Length: 451
Image 1 (cartoon, rainbow, N blue to C red):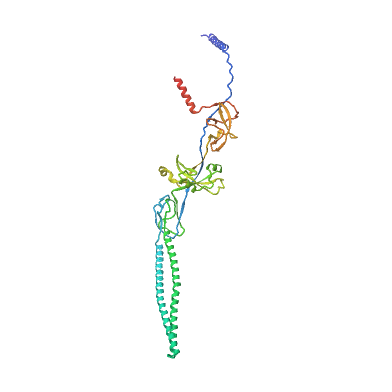
Image 2: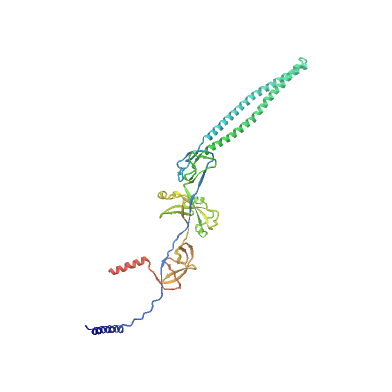
C-alpha cells in the first residue's frame, strides 16, 4: 500500500475518535447538587457500670525472717557432735540437738561441787553431834558445880562451929571455883558451835551456787532448737575448738516470714486506721473467725510462673523513711498458706524479692476509667444521642493507667476514650464500632448475602 493512502487512513480514524469523544461530552447529564454532610467526630467509647471495689495498695519488698537467732557459744571447748540438719538451708524440728560441745570438763566440775556439798553436809552433822555432846558435858558440869557449892557451904558451917579447920573450907571453895570454870568452858564451846555452823552453811550455799553455775555451763554445751526452722548460716565444723562468744551460725523460725513494704502517704488512707495497729489486733480478729484487719497477698514471679502466699498487715514501723518519705509497714506471711505444689517448687525463703498487694477499704460506688478518659478539671466527655456532653466527676483514686471516679456518671453512660482536640458541647459524634460489634455486623451481612 502506498504511504499516502496509509497516512490518510490514520487521519480519518483520529478524526472519528475525536468526534465521538466530543459527542459524549456534549450528551453527559449535568451532576445533581447535594448538601455536604454535617461535620462529626469519630470516637471510641466505653459503657461504664458502677461497682463496689476494694482498694488494693501495691508495693514490693524483700522477704526476711520474722524471728531469727544468732547461735553463739556460751562456753569454750571442742565441738563434739553436730546434727545432720545443721547445714545451710537445712530444716530442723523444735528441741532437736543442733550442736554439742565436749561436756567432760564441765561434768568434772559438777562432780567436784557435789562432793564439796557432801563434805559440808558431813561437817554440819559433825557439829550437830558435837553440840549434843557438849550439852551433855554442860549438864554434868552444872551438877558438879551444884555439888561443890553445897560442899563448900557445908564446910563453912562446920568452921563456924569449930568442927573442921579453915583449910578444909579453902579446898572446898577451890573445887567449887574449878567446877564453875569447867562449866564456863563448856558453855563457851557450845556458844561457838552456831557461828561455825553459820560459816559452814554459808560455804554450802556458795558451793550450791557454784553447782548451779556448773550445771548451767554443762547445759550450755548442748544447743537445742527453740522452734521448727531453717539454718541460714553455718560457721563451724565438728572437732573445731570454740571460745566463749564464738559465732556458730544463724537460724530462723519456719512458720512465719515477713516483708517490709513502703507505702506513700496518699495510699495510706485506703488501709483504714492503722496508726495504732499491732499483731495482737489481727490475732484478736482471727480468734473470732473474722478476716485480718488488712489482708495481703505476697506474690513471687519467676520464669513466667507466679506463686502466691496469703498474708496480713502485722504492724506499722515507728519512723518514716527519710529518703523516700514513705511509711514502712510489716506484712507477715504464713509459709503454710501456700499449697503443697507451690511449696515444693517455690518455697518462700528470706531474700526473695516479692510483690505485695494490700486489700484495703471498699468503695460503695465507683467507676473505673482509663486515665486518658479524664481531662483537666476532672472532666469526662460522654456520648449522648451521638452528641458530645461534658461531665464533671468526683475523682476517688488515681492509679498508674486508670482512675476511679464517683459522682458525675451513671450506669450505661458512654464515656469517650479517644482524645478530643477541641471539645464543644453538642459536637456531633460517630461512634467507632468495637471488634465484637464489627464481627456481628459482618456475620449479619454474610447471612443476608446467603439468603
